[in-house]
Length: 326
Image 1 (spheres, rainbow, N blue to C red):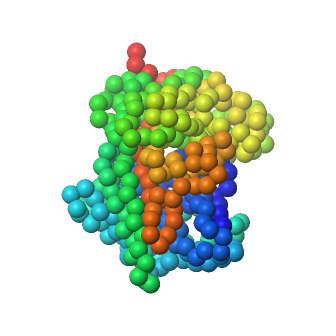
Image 2 (cartoon, rainbow, N blue to C red):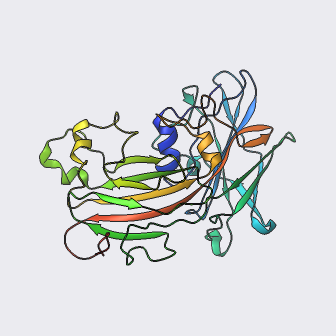
Image 3 (cartoon, rainbow, N blue to C red):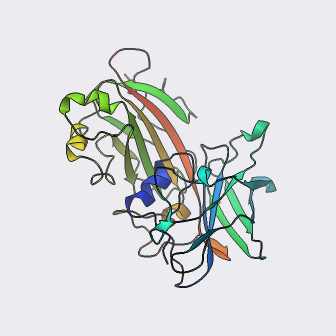
């Protein structure tokens, strides 16, 4: 049985649609076996972490798992508890449908209680190791361990935009001008995923007469090793979307973005567990079968993403610092 996000969506939605939530990857289990499927990806850019659980009963049936005890042990031994959310919405990318064998899956979503004032502390930190512990109502136990990829930084940006230690920034580029993004290596990363959400294209490209221009338009890019640390925006993104959008639209963006649009860029360093569980298009690091990174009475993924975000305004006038150093 396969728990299927199908093709490109398995990669783009979890990573870097990088909408704050978890999304189900594809995991193979023995035919006819009843298993609890775990989808847990810790992220450095979220205060509230999420864990999604559902139970395979064989065939095309999937049930929620609303009666589990879920916790993550942080460095130093502090235990972070997760409570059951009223609906699965926090764990799902609502633009897609989570499916089991092509049918909607019933999913239980557990959200961390957080730490600090109102749980807003960002407790998942680069380079740290975390342990997942799940206790099921029938006594079953599931365990996993992940190490968040280490710190990295965007090297190609103006120091005013990206000072040492920055994790987010905002800048401007001229229209029709590609932006090369170069970052340092993140220790422990098995790949880097890049996602850009482009707002305002419909109005900016209205003179081209294109029939369908999504707003926002989402494009995904991929660097497949720890040492592959360069992508060009927007030309080297969109490899997984080339069959989803009008070819004329993608061609119009090859040499840069039009004036007046805004691009929200996210780059994530992914750990081994994440990379081995997610596949799509030509990105098949674990071969024909996704590799489970949890053990015990369940299968699935307990992985980690270390993320950086950049807001890019396409404008010639001042108002934001230039993205490129002068």
